[in-house]
Image (tube, rainbow, N blue to C red; front, side):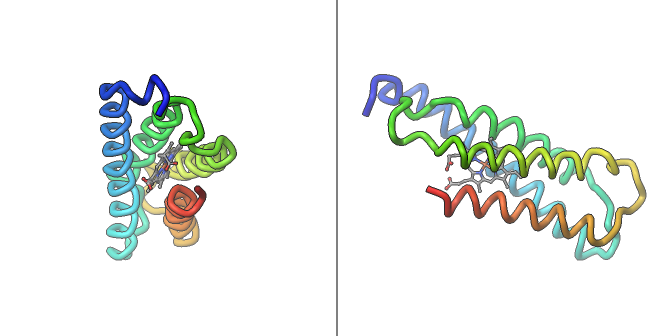
Length: 124
Ligand code: HEM
């Protein structure tokens, strides 16, 4: 373990950010699936805030909080996650005041969210 990671305060910060990141994921995916099942394809506040929290907490988590050694996540993985999260944010932010969006647009948001979670979990 390198010097930075051995500071418990840095590890505590990383865990708090990861916790916020998982809450954001719950808001985004939970908000979108609940809304989808209601049959009205509308961008609700949980989806909007979830997409914002994912971007902010994900970028913060990308700082070298694990000591800067081999434990750090792959930068290409982080770039892919950032790209997908920006796409989700744009798809959520622009039509946020519309009464409804297309079903395909809504399924796109859910799919990109699931793909980003899969990238997080399976790309090691
Ligand atoms: C819709 C957007 C996003 C979703 C659904 C998502 C999902 C997840 C999930 C489920 C985890 C937990 C993985 C684990 O602990 O095993 C995670 C971790 C992480 N995410 Fe995200 N994420 C999103 C956006 C981002 C963005 C934009 C970034 C930064 C560019 C990012 C960077 C990270 C990092 C650094 C970790 C922890 C370390 C790792 O396992 O790679 N995430 N994400």
